[in-house]
Length: 102
Image (cartoon, rainbow, N blue to C red; front, side, top):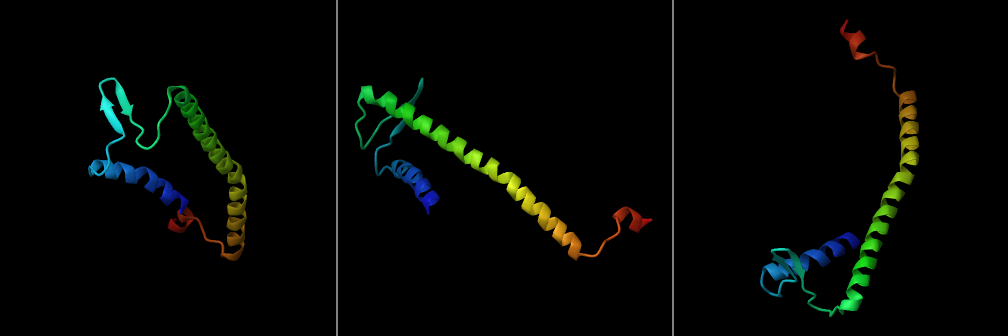
């Protein structure tokens, strides 16, 4: 549910602005992209700290997500190796494909 909500929070305003229901918040310019906040007023003194903290949070959140996956990988590999060993004990020995062709 959370992923769908996050995707909807990004996609819905874009779809509404493309349909012309709300004004667009992004405008391509010759030297970059102009971002217009539609529902909140950003004071110049608060904008840079807000963007900096938001970017740092996104970077740290991504790093924690990657670290979580990396930390769980050895455990998953051990479980797969154990499952492979158990299946080998249950199944009969099969000759190699090379020796079966000879």
